[in-house]
Image (cartoon, rainbow, N blue to C red; front, side, top):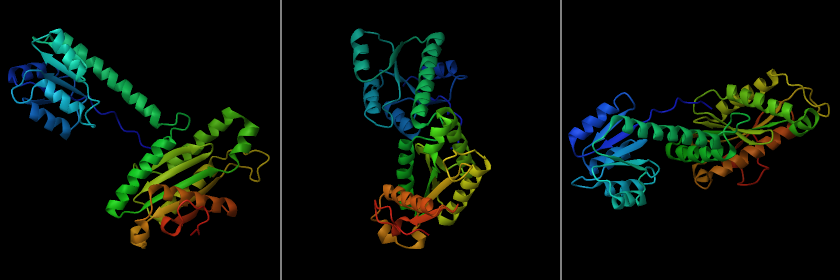
Length: 325
């Protein structure tokens, strides 16, 4: 999986007084990407167009006041998590209570003092970094660096829907470490963990494109999602994966038939260009996984160092005995 650089912390400044907007802009000019709005309607439009990380929002505006804008932001699912700091000339308990009830995170009083404004903004920048780190932890399997099974299955659903709309092919590989239970029993958990890390590295080296995704299923099982990839391309990736693991030359347990760690790989694919469009309409994303598991079982039974593939159109949903190709 490719890791992207963190996005910059973006701020939306909202005030109908252009002088205040310019002043805050100057205070924060070297801090973060800034966007501006001088009305409530413009603020909502800009927030939807590009979701900010923080909104600095004037309370008193003529078209939509700050409370109305805040309420609209918090009722929009894509924007509900964005912290809102009210900027106001009034600091009554009633006003602050109303703002907090609407979901505001904080208040800054006018006239604005640069050190205080910077301190508040830095606080929410740190909170965003912490939140991003926690979300990344939920998505990632710490041991192997692959995404978790839950995230992998979410990506599978998204790519299935995208392939349904575009007609592009989509392939899925399931790779099992042959005899991983025996490996774990002989060498222990620490060495088994190292084996899993090395296999995950090998799979990432085989799935080279930014869109390709490696996920950890359970035990010694991994998934590789290959968007816009037909069976021929998936065969190439599967072969690379098996060769990359063999190249690691990981000594296997004495109870296993093979002296080195190897993979069983099964794959499934959907390709409207190959026909079966009407059958594809009856399939769901999980059928791709079921077909890949059927192919993996066939590869395990054959034990001949070749991946097996099942077209999701030709597989019976949730049945693991389809015909391989």
